[in-house]
Length: 285
Ligand code: PMP
Image (tube, helix red, strand yellow):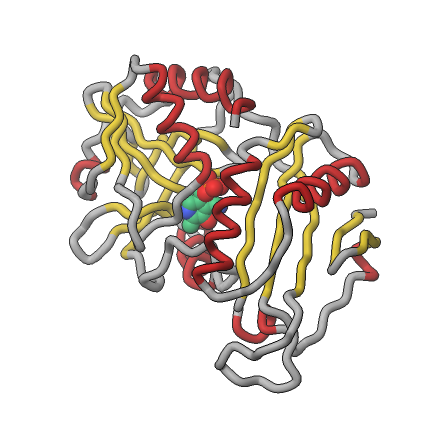
């Protein structure tokens, strides 16, 4: 039985109830985070909470909860639930109003919900063991504030479903200039001639915490060159390697795009190096 956190209390999932007038339910009016936890150790906790605080400020939700309070929720849920490899989902919606009206209401309390779910074990840098991702591509039709980790995810869900319905693991998105933005639930990268290249942070992509950590780890190590710049879909199709990152998958190598092999058709050598560095340094964040 799964134990969840709702508005200050821990309880079995079946007992967790929110109002149908909650603006998270009616409008997708909220912010969320997913933080990985391996054997009780949270990865990237500080940056995840910073992003949540920024997201809440961007959408004007006034919710005062310290990083220590969030840590206590994460650690308590990890302890109360089974499983060594967990994603901790944190969610703050603007709360329940008495009526359905678009303007932000005054004087309502935010709804705070958290639960854990099982994620795959952290990948090891081994070509023989890692899952190679197959992806579809499609034009990015989401909104122009993709930097906000909003619970309103229908655009992402529809794009994910497009790839999924054709047997793919993800969908890589591109803008009207034919430049890659990100995946429907992850950031995206190419590797060309040994250089790791990923689109810069702007309104078109989520500032992923795995992205932040990976770029920092690679730059500190210095053996792999990193560039943040626009990447055209022609470059994606001609890349030596293509990767996706997210908190639950770390660095995922893409082996097939729209049914065609990436690079030499297998997992690349730069991925092995990058995942090795990431695995060694991730607990510092
Ligand atoms: N982009 C999107 C659209 C996402 O939903 C996610 C998280 N699933 C990411 C990027 C990766 O973010 P993070 O590394 O913080 O998990």
